[in-house]
Image 1 (cartoon, rainbow, N blue to C red):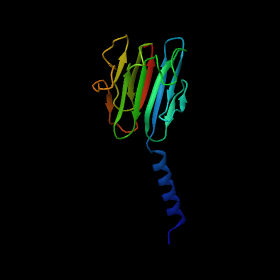
Image 2 (tube, rainbow, N blue to C red):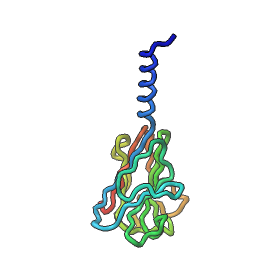
Image 3 (spheres, rainbow, N blue to C red):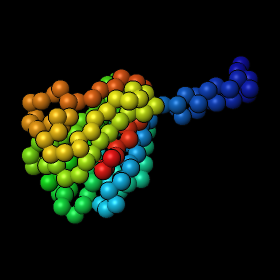
Image 4 (cartoon, rainbow, N blue to C red):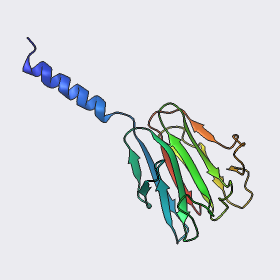
Length: 155
C-alpha cells in the first residue's frame, strides 16, 4: 500500500513538472512617444496592447506592430514583426511584404536563450526585413527551450 507521504511527494513532483512546462514571454518597449504596440495570435485574437504576454505552451503565428492609427488589423501599412516561439525551433523576422511597409524603426531580440540574436529595421529598405515571401535568409532562429522575445519600436 502506498503511504500518504508518498502520494503527497508524487503530487508535488507532478505539480512542479507542470509549472516548469513550456512558456514564452513577449515584451515591448515603445521609444516612439506615440502609438500602441499590438500583438495578435494566429486565430485573430488580440493578445496584448503593450503589456508583456506570456504563453503557457508554444506561441506560434504571432504578429506585432506599433499601431499608429495608420495600421490595419493585420499590420497592413506598417512594419510587422512575426514570430513563432516553441521549444523545438523558434523563429522571428521583420516583414515589409506588401501590404506591409516601413512605418517606424522596429527590432526584436531573444532573451533567456539565444541572447543577442535578433534583427533591426531602422530605415525603409533595411536589409534585415522580408520584402517578398520567397526570402528566408532574414529569419532569425533559436532552439533554446522557453526562449522569450523583446520587441522594440523606435530603438
